[in-house]
Amino acid sequence: MRSVATVAAKHGAGFRASLDKRPDEIAAMFDAVAGRYDLTNTLMSLGQDRGWRRATTAAVGVRTGEKVLDVAAGTAVSTIPLTARGAFAVASDFSVGMLSAGSGRDVPKVAADALGLPFADRSFDAVTISFGLRNVSDVDAALAEFARVTRPGGRLVICEFSRPVRGWFDRSYREYLLRPLPWIADRVSSNPDAYRYLAESIRAWPDQQALAERISTAGWTEVGWRNLTFGIVALHRATRRA
Image (cartoon, rainbow, N blue to C red; front, side):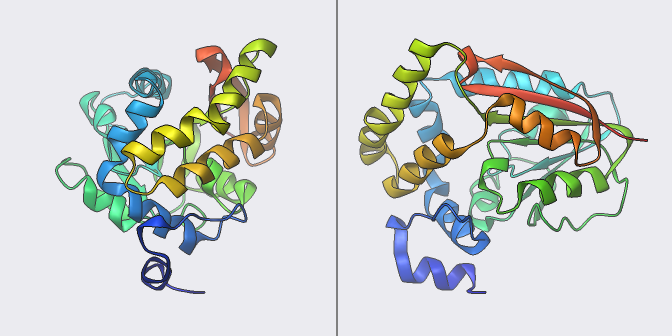
């Protein structure tokens, strides 16, 4: 496998990953956008990302002293609210550039791939991942890995782009992914090509029910979801089987 450094050096800041989700390519792509990632997300979501993070934190249902793993945490912007609620929260991401961009956020950070987390079995009370599962090369293996590191009865919360539930809104949203989103990315992102990958990966992602079924076969029970912003984003929650 090529190293992340080799991929980044070859392609530079304009590099975008392919939809086969090679880990080295995905990591290099996120390294290239790390510096302006949070700002770009806020602009491109029209500020909705803040509400999505609040909903995710609430869904985790943190109790004081619990251990929570935030996978694909990026700059740890999603990890800080968990610590604010009394958890010992760990930010994990396979993009070292993203973790470095969040160096000012005072939480433990671990560079790791979601398919091979460097934690013992049953280490955490909850695992959460926001807008990262879509970038994993083997979603089912990742869901099983999350189950491995979660104690029986622990929780999983996944915040991910999904399918709008209203036909007219779905059409408008897909049009946004095709035209306005790339236009905005060209003007505000340090790597606009990465956001073309983003749009393509969203369109290729399964709907709410299909993802719920995959979660339920990977060591999780009590799987459910609720839609945010008419289904642009879905918040899936599940419990680790005993």
